Amino acid sequence: MFSLDRSLQKLLCLLALGCALQAPAKTVRVLTIGNSFSRDAVQFLREVTAAAGHKIIVGQAMIGGCDFERHMRHVNAFEANREDPEGRPYQAKAKSLFDMLAEDKWDYVTIQQVSHKSFKPETFQPFADQLVAYVRKHAPQAEIVIHQTWAYRDDHPFWNIEGFNTDVMYKGLRAAYDQLASEKGLRIIPSGDAMQTARQDPAWGKFIPDPGFDYKKPEYPNLPTGERRSLHMGCKWGKDAKTGKHHFGGDRFHANEQGQYLLGCVWFEFFFGDSVVGNTFVPGNTSAEDAAILQKIAHKVVSGKHRPE
Image 1 (spheres, rainbow, N blue to C red):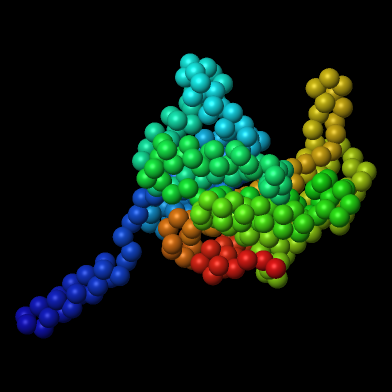
Image 2 (image 1 turned 120 degrees about the vertical axis):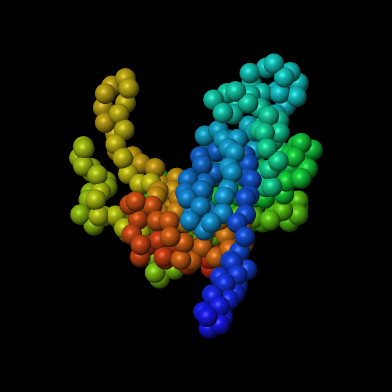
């Protein structure tokens, strides 16, 4: 009987030790002030967070293609006349930024420039400063952090401009966001660093076009099927509403499923401080092997403070 009691005591002690070592569950509240790039970044954030035993509440003050200047234009319209619809552009044009900031006791508020201006620091001000001041006034408890956006895919039409490419865009946006962070004393969510690190990591690497597809003379409705290592959406056919003519184009700037997963891993580590390596959530069209690579890249960038060359 005594030995049974001792065994039971040992089991209870081990269970208690295990509970003590397990990190307590956290709830983090984040409001994003952004555009489709902020939507990409949080696409899988809830699932990654839940798989780690935590909870994240995400609010989105999001307008597609919205830059610092436009966010502030809507703020100014609201402050001038709270009945003006121009001041309520969020959540199906029902809410102002004032409403969004008051909706919850946010732990963090993220801000970002629109991607096609992200490498142009002259487009940030004075609007970024004004936005930071507005958030600090109406959500003083929240830490404002910069969401560093990312460079476009290696085959984006932007690169028709001589001397401009993915590396140049990344270098420019990194410098612009670093400058804002330094001036305002803000931390950066290194999304752009992670996307660039993936391009340079031998385990992932640069985008590989489909060798069997003629990108210069595509035939409708054919699309590339052999592209590899893309973190961006890719090619598609569009249709002219007036002429009915199909045209070949694509989305080489938004994140695809793998890109969104990488971003979700980055945001998770940034906000929770836990390693994402070994996280059990994997999106449906992503292999476990690729998910493991992307987790390690996110961990390297956030916890390892890695910045690409």
